[in-house]
Image 1: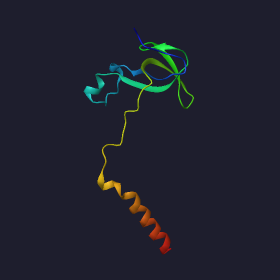
Image 2: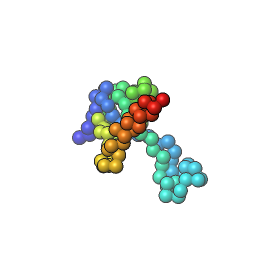
Image 3: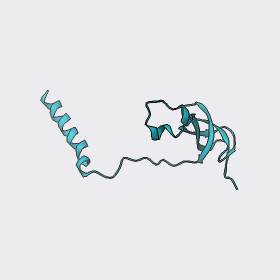
Image 4: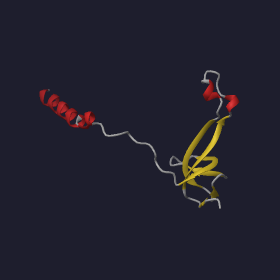
Length: 104
């Protein structure tokens, strides 16, 4: 059974911007062999199932159409592992700014 999402659900849609044969000549060969795909997240304007054509209203209010590729997508980005070298920078910068302020 295909998963369906109700109107108003946060989803991701995708669509092909340029087919593989239409990529720019300056693009590396391995990149030229695949289509340029766009993805956008937003709220469904009508109920749809995974793999179906769907329209979303983005957080900025744009209306975009594409294939429903994910329902309630998670944020998968991050800033990497903790870096001890960077942990104290904020306090150091504040101290430098305060010292400069006092010297003026």
